[in-house]
Image (cartoon, rainbow, N blue to C red; front, side):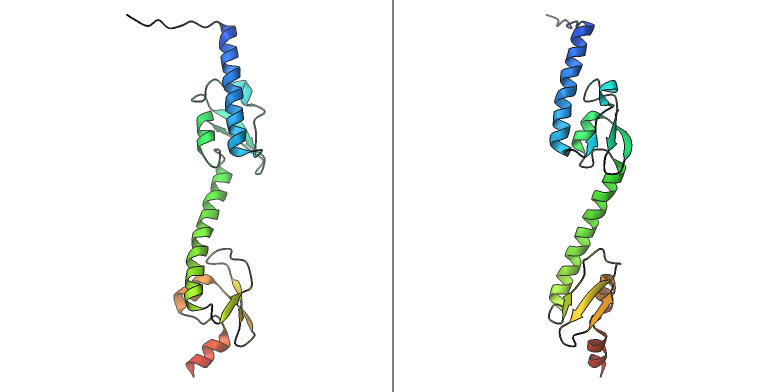
Length: 159
């Protein structure tokens, strides 16, 4: 026995697309909250798999085209600027973990960090517990040079 394709009237197809759009919009807002504007999506939405729809990122004030299904899959929703932000933040988090592991093991007995970690190549302020001095160094410099983090501690260790 052969299956016959069901024919749907144009009015029925519009209703199916409208319900599919509403379901997709609910999922998109559940996933991404209020980060994106979907004002123009209704004009081009057919199914979740095709075609691409135009979405506007409210944070970056940029519009982009993405397949509806991929908008739900991607953490960035398909916005390249959001994707960069996420990737950059993940990189900073890995660097922070690496530096604080090193710092705790080698320098925490002498130094206190006095500024926010913004990356391995961005200077941090350190307070020396021994000399009550504040100095600034890049985390990568401290890791790679076996530096003491305090100029007075470094000079007194040479003597």
